[in-house]
Length: 149
Image (cartoon, rainbow, N blue to C red; front, top):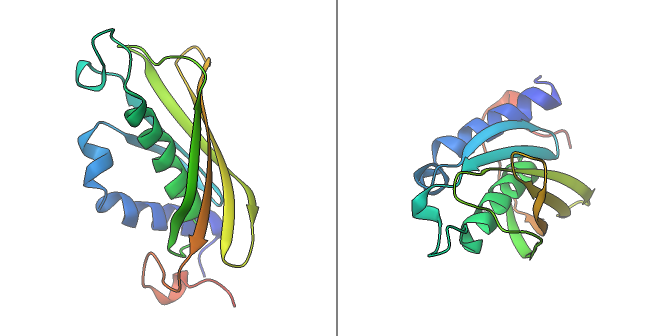
């Protein structure tokens, strides 16, 4: 049987292999463990508006990606029920933004996760909260990775 950390890593790898959207905008998966995940991206000209400020949609996508990896880290397919974001400061051209998502509460079928987006100076850019709903499916189909009943 896999450890919880190995299961989280294998689930993340399976998701990452099919996440062309995140890869196409420059998001990198940094780490994952049960109930938590870290992703990052460098703010490039294609991410900014006319003021060299990162569009909020990219920041939301970064936080949502961390949330997705965190809530799927138990090898149970989870989807978003509700997400919200508060922008605290602008992400700027050249910044490296990092989103860290952490489990706040996980019930039988639903979960609550918070993600904090910071820049390279550890200044908070955005605060995100996501609610997930677990489906009756696994991320990877391997007998060694099935959750305990």
